Image (cartoon, rainbow, N blue to C red; front, side):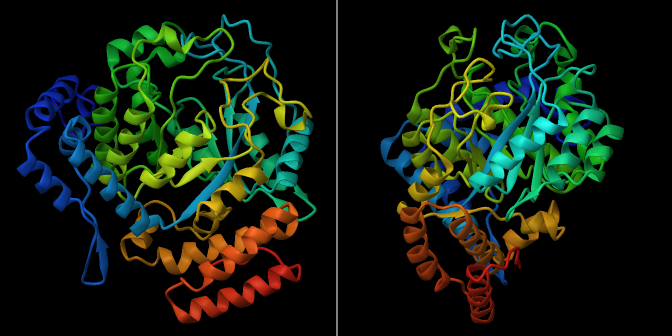
Length: 479
């Protein structure tokens, strides 16, 4: 095989020798201060001809930053990541929750308690049970879900997923409504991706787990997921099926992190080369303890410091891409990650099937341990106390600003006149309908201050009027 970024073959756009060569390159230049200065200068966001330009870095260049051992340059890397994050996403943090539909699975993944020989109790939600879960999520204040299901054509066919999406969108409880359903299910065909697109999904998410082919095949010994090429080429099929917002991710800790980082960026570059737009999001999960799964059994675990640097280097490499961290991570790690590049987090999450309707958090069907077990209200208050705007916005998806149209919004800098007011309005909805009195008071002050920062005066005044109407009881305004 030889490296070809535009190839449709997994082993050519994620070429093993290219990854290894990139790591050798990174080791050669990792402490070359002149070259590091050149890369940091290249990656800075600058305004030019009315556009906010930020070229990002190639997988080789970003690998150099990740390998850098010089403390003073590592500080510069973190600072640049913060600058880029602020330039494109400001202090807005989008909130979502996972909804586990079924843990039936026929794969043999060694790191997942859902694997076919696992002892975890099997459960699949009926449509009536899904309604109850969604109402519980709406009563928390959520507007955006990511649905999850194991791979099992008999128990979890595409018809079940489509019916579940229809059920979720149909439920309007009090002032609650799920406005965006993202989907994280197994790799499938172009035809079934077209069905998901027609069902009105937001982003299609699929974690690669590991890009190292030999390691991948060891970790996936049986089941459909054992086919490395079919899994790795799934995003091509999804985009061919009309889904222009796709989400990548690796499970850090399964293989060597520098290998995974380079390959992850190569995948992003491949999508850009073939379809003209890279991934809408990249997620950053780490192996965590779960029923029958000991993360210490995997010898590629990484420290919090290394994990945070991975996020910072990714933000520099793919400046326009949304970046996600889940409740797998602790409050401390999530706080650092927000500063370095994360733009979306989950809140009040339960990773068990049917967990949201249970008063006590169930553990017997959890996919992984939840480190951050705070309620959504506590997470919202925490974000605002840290100077962030919790956002429940789904406007871009609903207005058709997906794929390259969303990237255009980023690159023209108009995100501040669109996403900023949308975030404030959805936050006000949350404060009016769901927040505790203490959280509502914090939010009232935050909105008053942040409204002043909307750049366009006309948009600012229109937002002010919408906010007053939301307080009076109206809902669902957006730019």
